[in-house]
Image 1 (cartoon, helix red, strand yellow):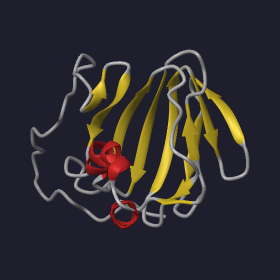
Image 2: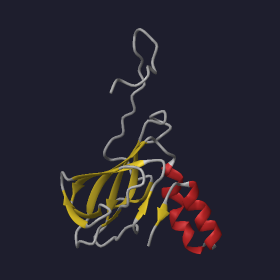
Image 3: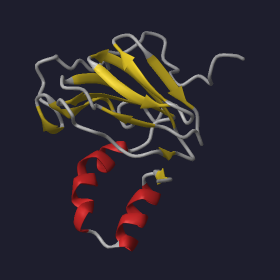
Image 4: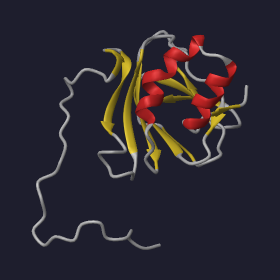
Length: 159
């Protein structure tokens, strides 16, 4: 294992960091039940996407699915999030972590009576923002439209 290929070729460094204050409102949803775009694929040059997910009490979550091109990792910041690791459900709490490689079955839910927060990390980066923004609109979509949307966003549900 070695370091990745060089990306920056300058000699002095540059000012290009991105700061996001904690007070920034969610990009999707609302405070307490939304998604914050911490580091998008555009921002990281395709290296990864990092999102803060805030879930209200009993928010539920997506059914079991997998991704063909991206891995997904979960880091619990607060509360209890039920994580499915492809074999069983685990009640994950603050500080718990789950990494799911490409092809790995997984799901997550907030079934507790309290809010929960977690970080989602997708590698390599993928344009997940459109998925988060348009998923709620898929309720009225035809079966073909929904299948095309999920295929475009590398999300394959198994139940």
